[in-house]
Amino acid sequence: MAARINRLVYRVVGVCAVLAGLAFHHNHTTQPCSPDQIGAGGMCVSTSLEMTR
Image (cartoon, rainbow, N blue to C red; front, side, top):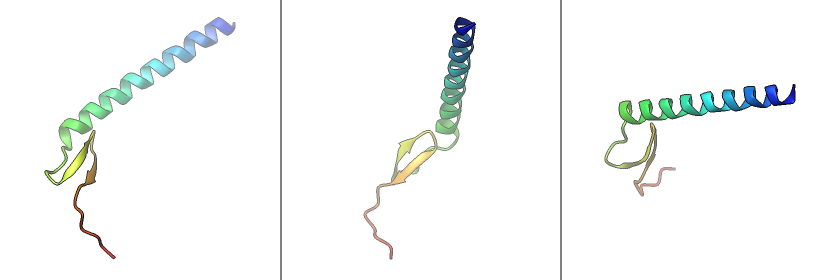
């Protein structure tokens, strides 16, 4: 029984990893960072040194 549960867990984790990779790739190609930003997968961070208060 434990071996069956382990196989199920491995499959679920594998499927989730593949889906996360596909989502990252989709965001990376559809939401590129602007020239003053750095990042990947749609998660961009500004490189501007401008401070706002």
